[in-house]
Image (cartoon, one colour):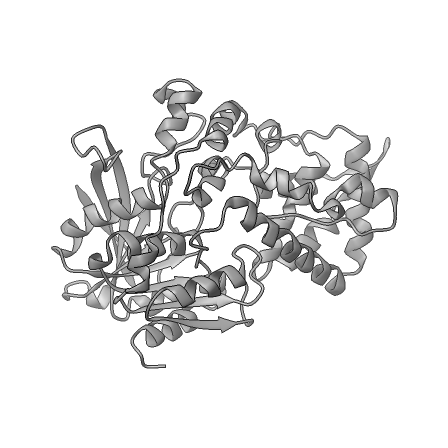
Length: 433
């Protein structure tokens, strides 16, 4: 069933599909997928090639844009674009604290969520491609985790791809989650250092907030318990183009004077809870570390364990001396399932996923080494979310992949650089640049 409607410069069509929950059991339970088709108004009746967009995450639905901004405007010059809500996100059988109890208890929920990684997403794409394109291969654009999915696509079903474009999302093909986070914490520290160099006044502001949280029990209006570790996790913003500025404006508005003395302002609390809550994307927290699982080793709350190897991130130790408070980011920790009301009912489920030891491989290295699909990837210098060295090592292992290495953009370059980024990558993939 489809329905079409208009926005400025575009025609949108809602599309829904039924696919197996487990593609290894095609006759079993099914789930519903949703995708939004976008085409330029003046090309609505033309026979155009397709571009599938895979959002970053995991756990985020596709962009809900208005009109044809940025990269989408560039894509619409020559493609019909399909914005897929990956399974478990958006309108595609969402997985959250409200819906997962339909599966049963934590064990049943965890078993269900094992089908929500990149390999299942790729098979979803192949299932719907036959209906969308009539079997013709399509171009796929993957941002961040979407790029992880594209790398799996090149491994599992390259025959479905005419061209592949990856932005900030070339994964390591064989790193365990521990390797990923051992590379991540030094990068995060560099981002924090750069933030304090730009906004030196924020170093004292961050220490003051952390000190307050270490000595007060702060519960935000939503019920989110704001601990010092939760406050530090606001550093996830530092990996985006405008994140350092957004963090600065948050910190400058932290305290207000009341008859009882200084306390965290309502404005700060409201903004902080919006940035911290996983209510809109709980799947990110639930399966984040599982995207690195490919063997019999459990991820076992990798980020939490590895963080202990970097004592400079300990807030109490930093405040006891004269070290700057270090923010964190792009990591999931068990305490989040205590702090966040959207995650609390799912803590046991998350723990079972962390203990799992039967993750299937996501990448076929032999197949990637003989790849024939035109591929181009933007690799951002010192990307906070995806390790640059890991990405470049992978790039060398995918035959024919062409890279654009740049420090002009942060991880969200497809958003901030828009049409220029996509134009450059399409030209690279086609051998025109």
